[in-house]
Amino acid sequence: MSSACLIYYYARKKAKLAKKDYKKAPLSKVHLRVLTAIVLGQFTCGFSLGITGGALTNATKYIQISDMWTGLIGAGGLIGLSSSALIGRLSDKIGRSQLLMSNMYILAILSLLHPLTSSLALTFLIRIGIGLMMAIDFTAGNALLTEWLPKGEDSKRQSHLLIYWGLGFIASYLTGTYLEGYGQHTWQIILATGAIPALLTALFRSFFPLPPSPGWLASKGKIKAANRLIGKILGHKWGISCHFKRSKKQGQVSWTILFSKKYIRSTLVGGSFYACQTFAFFGISIFLPILLQGMNITNPKISGNLYNISMLIGIFWGSYHILIACLF
Image (cartoon, rainbow, N blue to C red):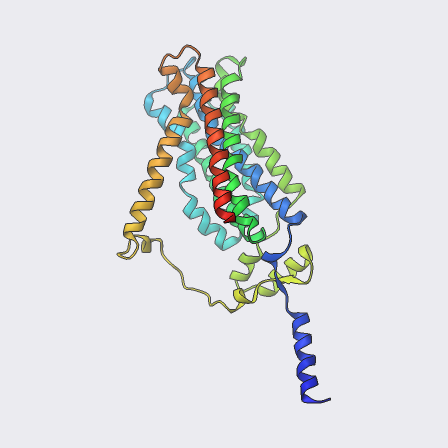
């Protein structure tokens, strides 16, 4: 066989062995399974965070709650959620799917503890624990979604997550406003309703398990394991991209670099803008039932419904414009 034929033969063989980038694979059942699991998680997070306001409003009918405890219990979920940076590092070490397969069960258990205690201090600690479980979905869930979905679909679908979070938040307002009939325990029952979406999400993830992230496996040097996983789920012609294989592993980067001379200005500008937007939003939305009650509005339920309808319209409208930006 001539040298030209040998070169052609080995080139063809190498081309057959080369795998296509799995991020360019068409949308499939596994992608939709991952998407559904994350969407359910976002709905649950929105519900669990927003349920506090309605519960506290109801609690004031039966027990004395100081402004300090009202603020602490209302913000407990946010305090736990603020640990997202630590949860993100944990998911980088042990993987995304392992955390996402257990956090909703824990969230459901924590929610069901509310009727068992009337202690405000314990309620506050439970809310922090629930916030920690939400942080897992906000960090590991988003990472798994973008690491599995095809290129183009990842950013588009991720921009829609706020819609499902908003729907959960609105559902919590309706639950907290209209759930009645349990007397002095009503506020505890309202808080416990967070277990319902959490348990449904946990069961979905158990019956349709979340696959590990190929990108995470590859980042740990497990290229063969990542390719086996992709081949099993999407087909053997798909695998980790050559660009990922060639990229050199970077050293550990500390969060303190954000406050270095190079990045301090961008950090302050971006952080200040996000803080002003987020604090105002959560400050109003979580405590909306209490605010409406304190303003002596004739029908606070209607006013609250109008607020949430307006918020939902804004979320859909904003997500639509983000989608347009992603497409063009």
